[in-house]
Length: 286
Image (tube, rainbow, N blue to C red; front, side, top):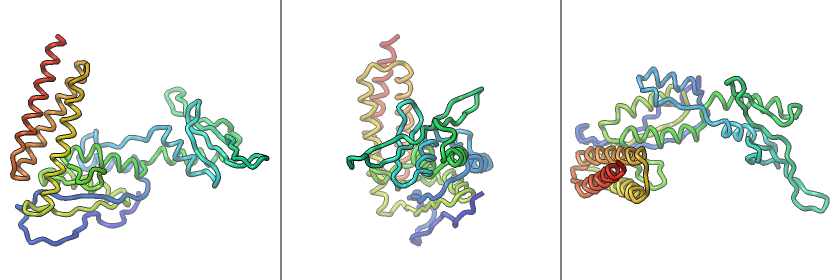
């Protein structure tokens, strides 16, 4: 198991404001190194988190791509193969001095007897053994992009967070969801060298204006996407999915009304109107 670099809770600025005024925390992270899938999932289980929080093994294509990029020499490139998998290509020059490329090795996977098997176009290739060794490693770990995607999509969604930048990276988490976020932090402290930082955000802080802006922008985008979808010929499953999204958005808006001390009635009314439109489409299909 990887030893944690240090505790990820970082106090950046002291505040004399009472904890009762804590609206939530602004969080961000810096990730480093691979983490064994079995270890992080075992820690998530031990923390009492539901099974859907478990990280999944990266796709075979992603693992092959990472493997070949790791073993490639200078002047070699990795590209998707026309017949599947990925190919290792050597770049050089022909007799006329023009760039020339030659395929060194194609790597792909097949399922044989319900087991994933790594296949190489040349089993006797000088890199065959190291390719198998590195691929085995990448099959047992999640890399920093995998953890970042898990945090910024699945986890952030489940703690009612809003992004404070259009490009992501900084998020506000309401105080009521901090216990769940705390479990995630402690798991990462236990099994990785990832660094996660947080900064308390109080109800009277200037940061609340940024949170308000983020909530409004996120809601506007979500409503626009549903409105566009409502103009298309959706099937019953699509209508139900969009309706669930509106319910989740409305619940989130109600939570942030309490946090920010404002009324978001216009946005909630738009969500209600869209839900009624979706219900009408559903009845029209009957």
